[in-house]
Length: 193
Image (cartoon, rainbow, N blue to C red; front, side, top):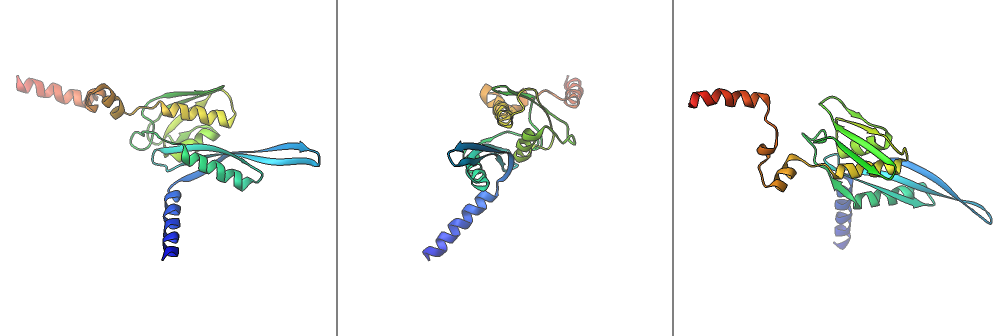
């Protein structure tokens, strides 16, 4: 019976972990010169996400590539962040992120635009579940700095619900009125008077 429970726990853990997808962004081979020659090691950078608003990144180092990727994936799952998405497809407002010399600009985009972003940033948006965004990196091209800058920017994003809660107001009070809403209220006002 205990053996079955162990198998069931393992299966549950695999199901939970399978909800996340991972993307290998960069792999770097480093060498250390020692008395007998060179010793090689590998560093991996991985982005993990559930494509529903949660994303994380991690880096791992090991003597073998698969082990480095495994370590990076585990670290990415440990430090995931939740990002509010508008209509589940784009960010709520334009954001600027910065980490060291890495600077990124992310802009909201209309439906059908797609992900317009460079390598490491594209991986973050795909794992996050964003479908429409325009992004530009204007600093360091180092993938570590680009991803960290992207995450710093995404942490600054606020949804209308978050802003309303902070101000103690309703979401309707914060969002700008649409032109169609203004016409209906203008027509309704003379009828009451």
